Image (tube, rainbow, N blue to C red; front, top):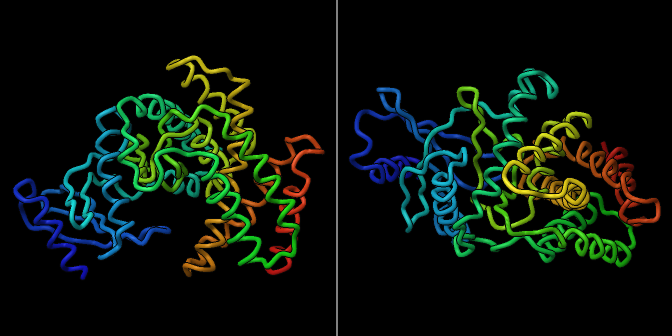
Length: 343
């Protein structure tokens, strides 16, 4: 099957790619897609990706990646150049951005090193540009999943995901789910008030940011849709892979707001309120995903990041009033206690 994948990639490139080519498989994180690198004798390289054969949802996702990628690239966003696409199979070929992720820089030099700080500053400034410029001419019909991040997604795929995958399936907690769901609804009501007319990457974190020649480049935008500004920034700043110090998170939020207000006026106070709510939503999604991938998909790599993600959520809730989200706060503490006992 992988040989056919290679042959299909070469046929798709056609006359645009000549010369002897080597192929090397690339391992995805949590995706079911197949990836490989094409390397030509003259040094030219590209990356090919395709969904599993017969995967209808994967095909729609690939089609979204092609359309959204072309749109973002044309708008000046630092995404890989899309090179070729096959509508029938979902095989997509794009510019190769190398192997260095922002997460690798953090691991090598430290989250608060000069190298990492400079790249994070660049990333948040480019994010603001992509969010604002990327919404111009964006067609929601390109989206493979939903056209907009909204209250339903918050309840079903973030807070609901947290409840199902982490609390029930992984930790088997005995909790008051009715009380918890009431607070999930309250949280979603508040978070959904943010303006959701901007481009939303939906998984903007350090392992989806490549570093090439000192410049950040963004990948895995195929789940992009319209949504609120603060969500992607929160995804990056609370990212458990990087575990950024709080002082660095605070400084990057201000750096982002400077870049954003150079593009359009946006109340800093309002943004900070929206950021806290959306950071909680994102944190719930992260925990649901890590629990599901580690226990249901057989990807134990993700389990190590559950405790840092729980501590992050605990710290976010500490910023609310004592009388707010009482059941959610106690559930997070219960998760921390249970996870500590199990490990």
